[in-house]
Length: 220
Image (tube, rainbow, N blue to C red):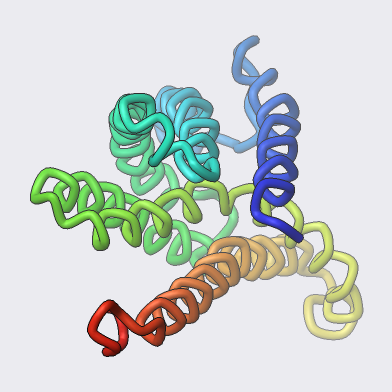
């Protein structure tokens, strides 16, 4: 699959995901039960900011945007950081207070912390004009921002695949089974995309370093 085609598919999936996720919060609804007084307001802020960060992340990895439209790239990048940083902070609070168990809470805390770290590090690297580090950090950040999409895929799949456990291990403990499924789905939702992107970046870096430079030495 070529990069432009893959980008179009990602853009389409992101738009469809936002069209499915946002409507309840526009009418005072929710998909996540509140666990403390400020849970719902923080959740709404997180969802609203993530609704800006996700399409901005897709635009930032649009093939050729950085080279052909550098001004647009910088402006969208600033918009992404302004949305992603507070969204990650909100995610850290509400993620730890999730009503779906400690396994998911731990995964949410690490995900939000990494998202915050890569976003801030990517921004600061650009300010230092270390653009190699900037690109790597922002690719990781965008991956984590968009990983919520795969999270929503894993949970229903695991719910069906692990159904025998509900009868044999969690007999009579439906809540325990739901917490297990939600926890595993939450972890797989972001660790797998992050691992794939890490592998891809490593492979890309190895290939570029193996290309001979002007002096015949490998390019770095």
